Length: 444
Image (cartoon, rainbow, N blue to C red; front, side):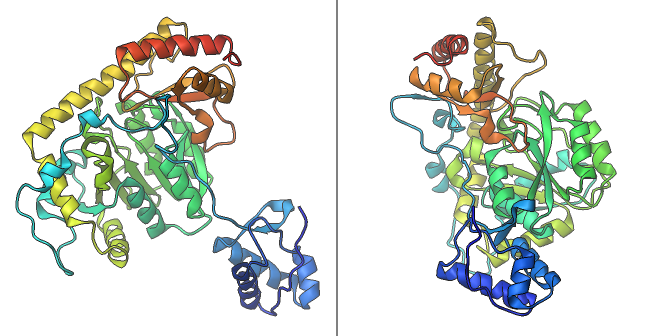
């Protein structure tokens, strides 16, 4: 990769930054082009090296450029990030999408037509009162003794992004699970934050890994307390207590708990946020149990965090569609829907357990304490994951390789299998094929 010769101009850091941005806007500089070394550009412009260094730092902080250490500074491009449910279909059996079972979702359109709904105008309350009351009752049990306010965002990813942006600046480190939910990986990367990977085992975030991330300077933590995507791990009461004790030593850190599977989880919620934490949020999306298209999440947060989140919501969409909020409220208050959630909770637990039983019967071992909750099962491999994924595709199965979810440098060789619609027969067939592939990964 060579340095691109372009007419960068300016005698102050601000002028140099402006010149580089103009060259990018005109197309004379494109992503991955190397900028001149600091010493070289300083000599060409007749300015002090510190002036050019300051300009490059401003470009990096703004996300316009990226530094590669001794590799120099280059023009940044838009990162491409993996996402759920993308590019699947055809004749293969989809065990990769991360989607809930459509048969276990309620009728949102029918709910939208129920109750009283009037078109809101500008200035209307941003949160449906009935929905806020329902959420506050549910949160009160889990957030014992701490005051909080309930807000509504356009899903969990929207909440996480706005919350991080409310407190962090580009270059700040965020402690995230490793492996990690694709939406969180994308949010952290696209907003210019650094990931501080926290290894996960069958009981969630590992305490020593969280401590290391915080001691390395992480200013926020994003944690999935149960039904972790991609592994299906859930925090035990003991593990949550260990994490709380560590976080209590860092009261200035923002804590975001993404409890995305709340209404249909088969395990209890265990909070990691200690009373000492000044800034925190508990986010509960409705996507997995009311439907992804509702694009709605309920957020309980401390007063200051709620104020910052509310400000960012007001500056953008002004409010999350009150028609969607009305629909969610009608569904959440419906006894028939709550009964459906019970059926979904049982079904999802049975389907993941079914796959575990079948793969274990074929000699594919999993940790004894591993009891996945949610829509996915994580299978660690003794072989390279990508050839296994390819071989399974040749046999008619779509799964996702574990490296897509990695936030650390050492990728775990694993596959993620979505079990949301997995029948007993399909589980048996998949386990048989997986065992055959692991014996001969390059066979058709």
